[in-house]
Length: 441
Ligand code: URA
Image (cartoon, rainbow, N blue to C red; front, side, top):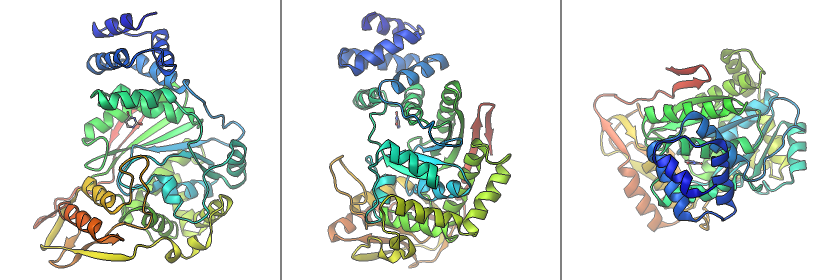
């Protein structure tokens, strides 16, 4: 087989076979295909697109390019959740204990990554002692004994995706639904879950800015999951404003803890309960989403989910005193109040701008070697749809460095759109995608 022939075939509108796709992935991963040929093939895929079968074959080949995790030693149906990412997305930290308290195991490999704030692991590391480096045996034992464990991605999962993503990033070939869907799904599939719930975000703070594009991606990923015999459902959810109020590592941990105690912001609590109800359904723990919702609400109100969080933190070496008393968690030296210049309804809080403001404070990584300041971030005092008076506080900026604060304030000011009329779209879930198709809400 020759790369030249594959490029030519795809350039002229042909359909690549499973063998051809496997050849490209395995030879490129081994370093036997030069970047210029790989880039040329990606560009032909970008323009000619891939059909469903090619996309599934690409996903499978990338999944098999490295280790795959065997979770069969864990009892019960293992359901994983994947969010395509957004601002203030601390969902796993509250959702994990909720589903674990309902009896469904959560075995999660999580990442750090670049972003406006750290990833789930960075956030959890706001709790002193919390450790995500564990052997696969300890990971599996913890899930069997306590129904929940979160480990760092130490395994060599889907190395082909890392190489190809880096190449796509510099050759303008990221924005292709088959390439995005296969890139996300190959890592999820390699992580070993039986069923997958996808939270596909749309809006200014999301990777997919427009809702139709988010539905297209959701459909593609659901098809891949189900083709690979994993029961897969996707929810398309709103990321036009930050999720919850807190954006920043320890601030988000505090919000997740408050939510498990029944006190969190309404949108975040609602999303956690909705996602939990679908995860319980996928795990066959309940017979309907309504039943799942009731069960999720119950483990919050009876304190079981909070208890699971404490066990989870203790079993991974974290100091549980920081969960009991959130005032102990990392705190910034100073807080600045951003006041409104106008009176009216908040129609928009551009999520991406809030994220960039948090990044300017030091909450995230600009490069993979940057150090995160766990204590800084932004807490919104008002959300889209709220009425605000002139001089009322819009947001609290938690900071340690005056120059960084100035930069963050200048950015954050531009995130707000305030008008006389309330035209905010605060719908949380735009639709559900299953093997049966799309249900728009
Ligand atoms: N996230 C991924 O993991 N891959 C993509 O291609 C896009 C977003």
